[in-house]
Length: 287
Image 1 (cartoon, helix red, strand yellow):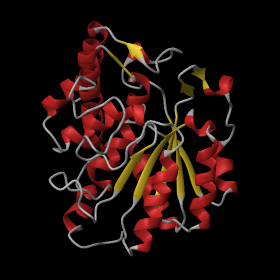
Image 2 (tube, helix red, strand yellow):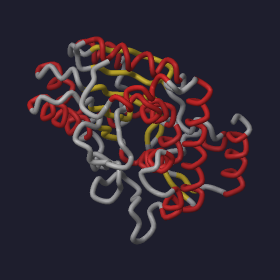
Image 3 (cartoon, one colour):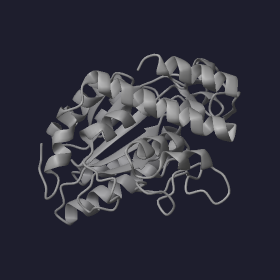
Image 4 (cartoon, helix red, strand yellow):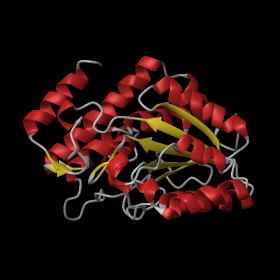
């Protein structure tokens, strides 16, 4: 693992958290996300819940960060290209102390610092504004290149949706990263098999993304996106590869909330507080 000024204590955090603690952290992220969306009454439940496990691993110690100094120049960066999953990111940031957890109840309300999609000008800890699908990986690649040119050793992580992978700009960025030898860029593809209008295989099948990224000379791994140990191991292998790296997360949209799983309309949905409370109680029983 690389070291950098002021990062030593952050580097060590990853080795202190047990698998049980990681699982608990992921459950707390899901609970806080559900509470926020439940208070609002509607939101992107499915796509938020499918990335909670990767967020848990990143913020439990894999990313070098400082919640008291969100703009610390030696931090690792996270670009959430699927910006509608912002509520899950906000929940994670609140749990890490970037802002008070009570702020989560203002999600997408007038005057909030937590808009429905990630906005770096409003929310402490958000590194890049997102929302226009397909653009985030280009932004992440640009940030990674800029950091390299400055001689920085920061890593840039990017979370891309499988539906937005139908966008041509994604593949322009996929072509760009190996050309520029961006070995400080790790892209997660949240392959939950669904998008706004239904199943990705029915709308625009991107086929085998592992082979596609590999053909562009990325270091590629395909893993269970809800297995915390696999996620952590894949990140370590990616860092050792010396290449721009893609980690395909095989996930389930709405993971952790039965009412949101295995249904075609779970992208943006209205929620019933009875369902929210039941899902939260079930998650709390695992703690």
